Amino acid sequence: MTFSGVFAPIPTPFADDGELDLAAWRDNVDRWMGTGLQGLVVLGTNGEAPLIDDHEADRLIAAARERIPADRVLIAGTGRQSTRHAISASRRAADGGADAVLVQTPSYFKGQMTTSTFIRHYTAVADASPVPVLLYNFSALTGVTLPVEAAAALSMHENIVGLKESGPDMSYVGDLVGLAPDGFSVLVGSAPTFFTSLALGAHGGVLALACVAPAACVRIYELVRAGRYDTARELQRQVTPLAKLVTSIHGIAGLKAALSVIGYVGGRPRLPLEPVGDDVVAQIRRQIDLLTTMMSGVAD
Image (tube, rainbow, N blue to C red; front, side, top):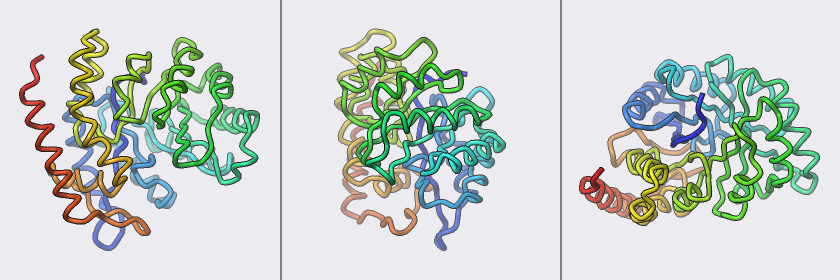
């Protein structure tokens, strides 16, 4: 199994009554499987995981597995505030067909999240998980940072196979790449810094932008792998405005709006999150049109 390339952390569609829209979920997954993505991440940050009940999570994982071929990767987010609950979620995800689990750092008791605490937490989860574990650091969201020293120690665990870093700190990414042993994948979650991260040695990305523009994200990855840095850098410049609109500026609501623009089922986010307005949708549509025009003129 390969934990390199481009993965899309897909949003969860809800019906008008706020319940899961599994038909839309399946249709969306089918469309993503028609792209060059290496796999999908379900129940990550963009999947609104904290707003989804455990029984809903189990249904989403199972439904995604039905539509994802064996040669593509299904990663399920199973981060919880307690080690006990993270273990339980990881086991259920494995039962549902997940190939690996993505475990976000616990963060509620921020002041007590030390290097040794993180090592104990992730070691316990990895010991108990039937499938490989990917560490998940997202400091801007959680308010805590998984220390590089902790990541380096955990990378030696036979069932911990990589780390997703969702911040723009290139020194952190560079340190992780330098410390990572063979077989440990460093994946990044910041599309605006994707090219730079790959140039530093990152193995791929879990990018919200890949939900909307998978071909462009995969192309950046392929260009860097081929050593065509100038072309990759230019493509990165072209995708960055849209990437920011569906992440740091408008978040999940912006991403769902972008999906609706391109014909996927985006829908409303789950309360307390709110949808974006028509002016934002128009802005997102313009950037999508610009990127589509640009990609149509990109030579192989």
